[in-house]
Amino acid sequence: MTKELSFNLTRWVIFILVALAIIIPIVIRKHIKLPETSSGVVKNIYDHVESLPKDAPIIVSVDFDPSSDEELRPMINALLRHAFRKNLRVIGMTIWGPAAAGTLVDIFTKMAQESNKQYGIDYAIMPFKPGGMQIVILLSQNIFEAYPKDYKDKNTKELQVFKGIKNLKDMGFAICVSAGQAVDIWIAYGKEKGKMPLGAGCTGVMATDYYPYLQSGQLLGLLGGVSAAAQYETLIKCQDRAIESMKPQTVVHSLIILLIIVGNIIYFIRLSKKSLL
Image (tube, rainbow, N blue to C red; front, side):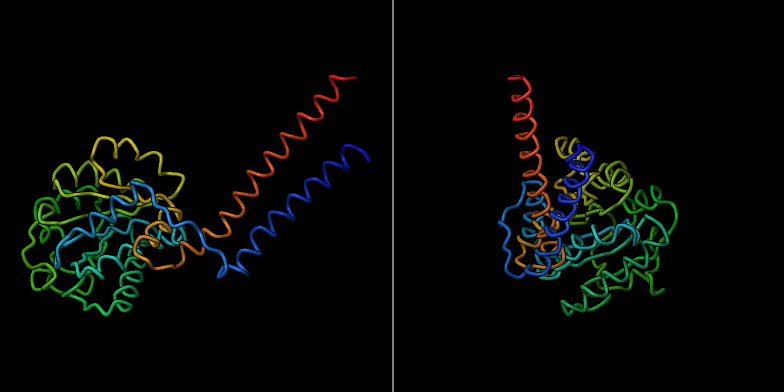
């Protein structure tokens, strides 16, 4: 067997193994159980939301569009389930862009229906307004100047969900879930001016960028990618999309680690044979 043929066969064997590692866990996913663990940065957010009293107001900033929906929606679903279960008042908004506004409305509407929550009393949705940084600064001064009306064109001052709220300092918690730089805006202009507890959610590849903010105390906790969303689902005891997505990922990652180990063993065996010649 030539080296080229051997290489091609090895490559196709790996392709087939990876395909099977994805397909089989999807087929038998109901029989796969992942370990119920959570990292400290995820549990910090859960513990804080859990500690909030009934009717405490929180802000959830949905700062991503459909391109990042599969990775980031599960963490907001889990957060909203937790908040609604605790009977917190939730204000949804976005500084990302017009494309994120539809995602914001869709997520909040579905989660509110699932939890039997009433618009204007238990939650409210703000319209997208351009400005980003300026909007967050206004929120730290006066919420009603930033959003005089909600996305349904109702006066926000008349909504029961805003009772006793003037600015970010009155918030029990705020979290920005973003696929871009919106978290940086919230840290610089929300946390520093509003002084409220701030959490963040982001894609997996962005997570390491925000660890310095955790160390400085500017972020209370961090949800990084589907793995963090799965951990949050575990904490609230609600198995949904994130946990289901992690099952094939876990198997594939384990297979890759195994292949790396096998590849190194074969390499050193061949190296030792050459040295004996």
